[in-house]
Image 1 (cartoon, rainbow, N blue to C red):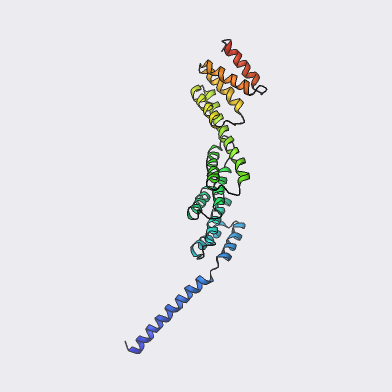
Image 2 (image 1 turned 180 degrees about the horizontal axis):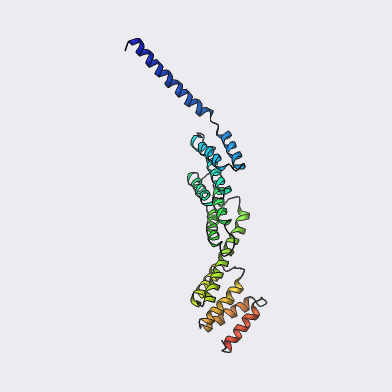
Length: 254
């Protein structure tokens, strides 16, 4: 190759390389994380979650300032909540907490995890799992973020979780009692009373526990529980029945 032609080739390659570099630099400079974030939020409002997440993922990868990237991660999680994809939502919120544990929105992420499970509570029969997980996540929120902005809501929701779990335990105890599995019923009722001393249906639990002891042949235990019920709830709706059961036990009747 002649020197002149060789020089032209080198120059051409240099110019192509230079243009390519400028193009890449220009592309990076043209990317606006804030505008992209606004666009993604608009898509979420329009329920176009797939396209929104694609943009949010791009923000995470290209936001060199790292100011919008954490918000993009949160909105990815939020989009899954709106799409009723609870497991994916929880996974993305946990990812945010792992990546940005000290971020100002970290308590929000933890609260959202708790709320995903809390919203699964439908009834004592089906809500036990959601209530148990929500309770654990709300307690984690209180422990890890004592200054969280959700203090007024948390205690009320924790109470609902505890009542849902207690309702479930009571139903299981009643099932064992009707089935004739008295030892299992006694264990459930005793555990319920110890774990949830403020349970709203304590009077009913005490009566069922006493009946379980009676049917299991533990007369003294039954009398003890009935006496406890009568003394604690002297005007309660079940006091009359408790007195009859106690009288029956003392007179030796079955």
